[in-house]
Length: 293
Length: 315
Image (cartoon, rainbow over all chains, first blue to last red; front, top):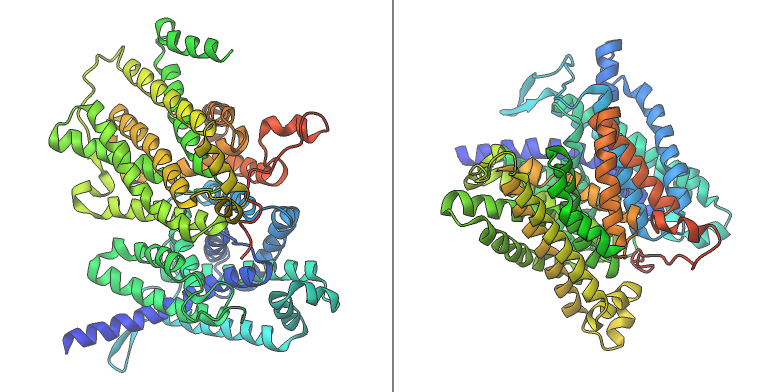
């Protein structure tokens, strides 16, 4: 009985974490689905969002979630800048050149963060930090529950935006067939700009959600890189629906590994799942080719 | 010219005993070995690895463990380190059968990170503190000299090996794979065999130099031996010097190590990495052929050839 109770408790924790992972990975999935590049600097944007929330909380005494109202627009423009100055000039370049350019960006951004906020651990001491509540006999950490709730809200808004707005439909059209969309009058370059902006905005949300759950330091984004890539690859590259399921799987797997093998093995799991999926099942768990979103 | 440089490098410690200068040259030789060996699959075959540091780290730990726990002589451990690295490289070879271009790059980055976690978490490897190694048997005023010649020898052998391979049918086969893997296979090239050989050779030398460098520093730990900065430096040096050339890795390693020294003094460790990151991004966008391709880009000399597999990004 105790074993099952522990297992159920771990599942709950894993699912709460998975919800946040879904937000973190959604931006990456969107860019791959639409622009078809692997944005490996996405996790650095997440940690940048994390530090923005930290500063808003420390210096302006803003709640880390409320601070998103300020950081999301800033990150939107950072995303656009990345598209304009890094991705657009490499439009016809080989995919590996794009990856090298992003790799340079990771180094530059990570160390800029280190220069501004130091390389040491930081934490956001929000009003709900460290609190928890009992529900149906299970222990819920308040920051994780809040983060999960907000994650669901953000994912739902993203899906709604893609399904029912004019821009969302244009994004999906470009993702399905870039050339035809262009012939039908969709401004593909503008869609790419918007997608990079939205993706960075989602990174800001993911960052402040992680910031209220965990303490963080600049180089932590390397283990988040494993998380977001394993989510996107396991879910099927470019498929937002698959990514949500994959995020829950990674969240649960990581929680179980951290509990049964020791906390240091937690991040290892994401990388292991990434490599196994890439080699054994590159189409992802759902494995439907061509169908996206 | 080439022989002159080599003779000067061999004679250098006779005239200059300055520890700092010798250390900088050892660092350059270590990086020449790493970039040159990265270049065989990375530059000539079109399989860009973002996780080449894995072999360096495995070599370093092999030497550390063998010297500390089994008292194996240092030089013997270097060879075992190289062989073990080559065995691990079979995993890269296997991955390269399934994945190309950016997916291969991501997979190698993940493999190197997994390597770091394994050495961090498995107890016999000493955890985050790593392993302290026996003190150098040489007296302090000459202790750097054996490592100077050792790393110079390994760097030269790596360069020679890669150069000779590019002059054989094997090298031509590798370059054919880079240009178009399907057509190369269609022309009768055993692409699997070619790639596996390339990975085995390219992992051997970083393993050896990893072992040598570990005995030089007299300690190993996961964060220094598997640091992502090695992979970043390798990529930066390769692209600065010219990917898929023999002179490129030598030029790139020398430029980046010397710039590192200067920048660290002037703008600090983090400032240096910001600048290096921006240079890497800039090179990838505007000068993917390397520094020496500048004159070709501006209208004279031969047309620069893209070093990347043009088909790698397609699904």
